[in-house]
Length: 327
Image 1: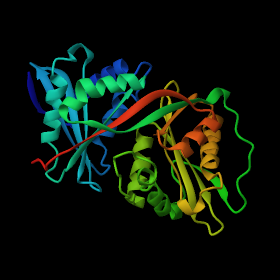
Image 2 (image 1 turned 180 degrees about the vertical axis):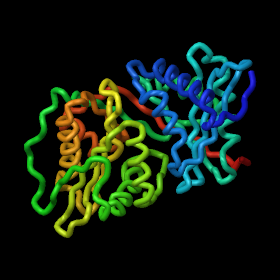
Image 3 (image 1 turned 120 degrees about the vertical axis):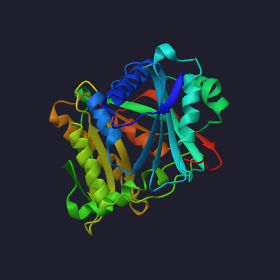
Image 4 (image 1 turned 135 degrees about the horizontal axis):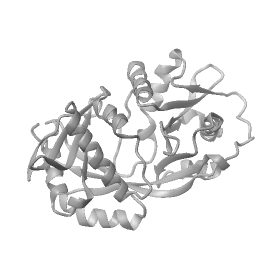
């Protein structure tokens, strides 16, 4: 077996990697449906602020698996490490070798590695930690529950929004004069929600980065449905985004939801989520919506339960502290 660099600009190699990624996900997550190889290739190649280093494991000319080290310019201390091995080649130490290769390819600024995994049950995640992650130095930092809504049977809530706020919904981008504020809120989502031992810091998504993300989703055939709540002064008090998958049979995902602290207690989180779901239902092509939140986020779990979401999957986020590594 040979491990070496895998270029995201090599069409054949990247397409083979996408097939392996899909096969590994389908085995680990029964019923999983991805965005498709071409859309996934666009994601890998997107100029989105992430430095992406891929390593492949080959037997002759056959790709057995690959790993990725991803580091965002806004958080140079952290690299996300992912590994996918084709099911027929799993449990032969290929994944462990690829994790090491990904770590070694990370920038010298990195002080910790982070990864995540999805399984049907919490017990399966526990087995993954003990049998694969922990021996490599990765321990669970927090857990999340993935929930799904059957949009076909969903009925919009008739409850009104608190006086003093106005909720509006926008397709493929909020008005330009609000993008700076929405970018600031997007940068607070992870930092202000419970996140176990991860300790995420606040970041800022610029208006330019916001626009590039919308452009990327459109190029992949997706549609962004964003709902916001404005206060009396016309400032954004709450935000959510639902990304509609290009294939109707695939579940769409809520990318994030946040109510600014000074505006909490007015049911704005539920209001903006319901507004986006209502817009998605009226499209007539979307059947399932997924969302997730930290298991300690009782506030968001209550909103999701009220809206009709039910648990379907579990996620664990792992981390490993390390000494800076040479790139």
